[in-house]
Picture (cartoon, rainbow, N blue to C red):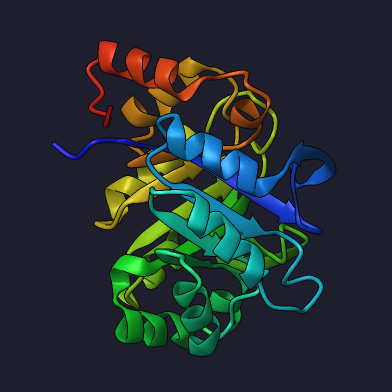
Length: 251
């Protein structure tokens, strides 16, 4: 049985880690290299680094900061934000990223998923999907959740898999930063309809929420930010609780 992964997320803006609620009201959460080092040494299975304003500001991901983080940790490291070409991915992988995450660029140019998975292998291509439930239908949003589309979450996720993505990072915009739990109904449907791993994101507030997303949402991994950054949940303690519930984790 595959172990479930716990993944802290560093949302980066102006070189600092930030965290908001429903994608807005950002506040400072610390130095990314210090946080990355702490997580690497304290039980995180992977780390996600998202340069959250790169797409909106029409610039590349902060590759120097990626290198600094990569040099400080010894766990798999996914980088996203402002990635729109094979060249962008090549630079990030050379700077120490193990995987890359694409979002807006994949919707605007779906063929990019095919190109990246063919060039680098699907195992290092994560497609992030930010979605919001509107009138009972999950709609995909772009540019850090600022631009709505008519794309249906589940249709897009299936296309992403067919084009060669190795993993989906699904963030519920409704749940993000609320600490009210993950969007487990949507996650369960995604995991049923896809064969690639699904990472749950948005809504972690306590240990029970992680238990629920693995048991009810059937997520393969759970990503969180503020509960880890502000020491509300300690990863070792979280994993001990998951093991007590019979949920397999790496210790």
